Image (cartoon, rainbow, N blue to C red; front, top):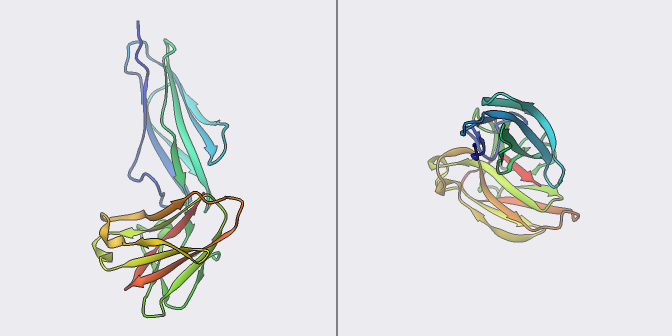
Length: 219
């Protein structure tokens, strides 16, 4: 008698911020008992919703890929539900994928002192750099949501960088990309608990030398 539930997991080289609005979800499903896999399904819901819909389903296990088409600013949640022939069931933890507002999006308002660069590893291949020589350089973005995050590259290339974050003129804190492990499309600062029905102004100011900005997540 098989009492062991199937195994299912997401995997991939990124965990939070995809490289573009269209991205691949990689996952694996297998039966670890003796009865055999009956079926699996990949389920989806938009962040903040409760009902799940089925994106894909099969009876065969193995490594799988699903291509998700999203847009800037989307936050989507995914889970895998797998069942074996004895009725044992596995439901994976929810995986949330947030697509940033890109640094080149017209909704972001830059002061003087910012320059746009091409960078293959950045979200949509672009990155803005701000300079503290200009009073300092800053960028603003108006959002409605309960959570926001700043996306930027991290590591030794940014060892002296410092950014200051304000919402509606209130200083929420600073971040230091050079103090974090080397990486691309990393969340370097985030805050939650805002009333999603209230429109607010986020301002990011360059506090020391050049500061990178790859995008902003709101959900």
